[in-house]
Image 1 (cartoon, rainbow, N blue to C red):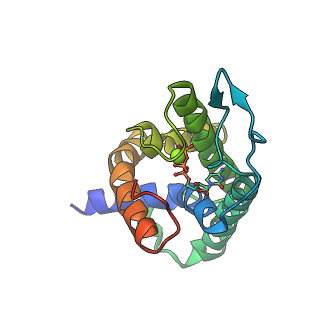
Image 2: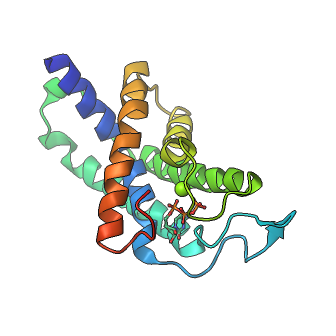
Image 3: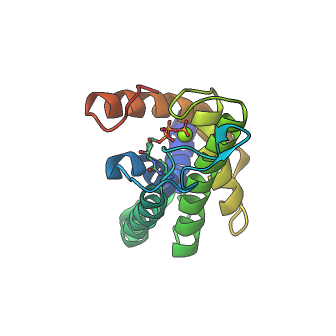
Length: 174
Ligand code: CTP
Ligand code: MG
């Protein structure tokens, strides 16, 4: 039981900047679409849901959360075995999350799925997988940490989106 709690702590500690980067853009209500409104074969390249403001703001917010983790690291019990957060790691996690989400949108548009319409499990896992992929360039990621995140992230994503819908920052509860 204790081992599972430690594993959960390690997993969420590692992924915090990515979650932060992914959660922040809806709050910004950005207006400048990355694809400049352009289409590809009749479908938007990315859509109005991927903006320059959201992209930059998400990465900055992810790095900010990572910075707080760097500052707080010494106050966390060593027994938990949390990995040290660093600025490059926070940046890769955040940029990976934001770019994974953008790649997911690109894929959805190619499948003729409109902006804001759901596609399971792409919406839930695109940001996570790209975040882990980029982070793995500079740190080794425990396979069980990755497994925990793949299992728990869709659930957390669902809860966060329902909350986001009710507080009025997300147009749909998914
Ligand atoms: N957002 C943004 N820039 C990004 C990512 C997200 O501005 N790079 C904002 C947009 O306001 C978007 C909201 O966050 O509507 C929610 O993001 P998400 O659910 O990923 O986008 P969707 O609107 O569902 O669009 P898509 O179908 O392309 O995923
Ligand atoms: Mg998405």
